[in-house]
Image (cartoon, rainbow, N blue to C red):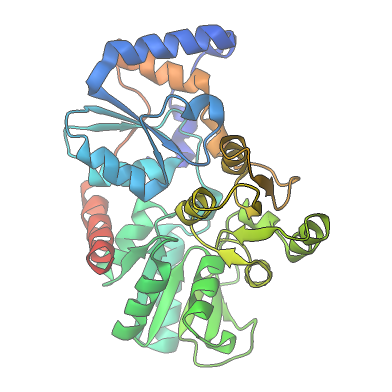
Length: 366
């Protein structure tokens, strides 16, 4: 279902919004009790605390989707994340399982920066300019339709954890790679592989042209001009400022941050990598983390014997992820109790087939 159609779908009535915190907690707990093992709730790491407390599993998007596929006795998968994550869960779970997104308005600005129509248009231009020497790869933070495009064109998906391995593989198979939809993850990964910035071009879908911000080279990597609105808020001057405040601090950022920010940081890696670095650290260690606020603050509360701060305390949390709240969660759970599932995410058969192929190709190389 397109996010453009979310207004056509019933949202919780005002009565849910008016419930007290205690009533919300009690009714969510009761619905979970009634549904028992037929229900699994997935909570993305960036989810707000009052919602993720109900998650049976926590993790990143692909990790959660794969976990859901393993819980075969659960008929209902309630994904507390965003739209593309629920799509991926639907791709990987069985046809008997039903994936539900508590609020259908919970989209992803990055995923929305590359629509299937835009990618089709870009492909015509890029192949006319560079020939059929391009393999498309897409970050899992993309729509199922874009994943399907990649699958149809002999490409594969990529995560922030395996981006370096997958990009290296793709460049061994093809002269050039189109990296969708996050230019920052693509650029940071390419540089880690030793690719010169001059060999990295950018396709701008709004201008419908290839741009050369680093000078024109061999264009081995073609980046889609998209980005994460949260991670773009962590800028180089934030690294400088936090080092002035905490001289011995270790700065770790997500690779969705800009190239300039990643270059100044001590380290960069996926959400899972960041968590593991903090878990393995000694008490008294100091970290400035460049990723979504809810996770950073949760880590600070958990590892209170370390100093853990956000690289930019003024950056907003992921606002679309934040749409998943307790009223919406309670609403979809009580609909399940009534036997009337709502907010179902279902990917069409053709798109699902090719999307799975793109994901399976990645898993074969991981």
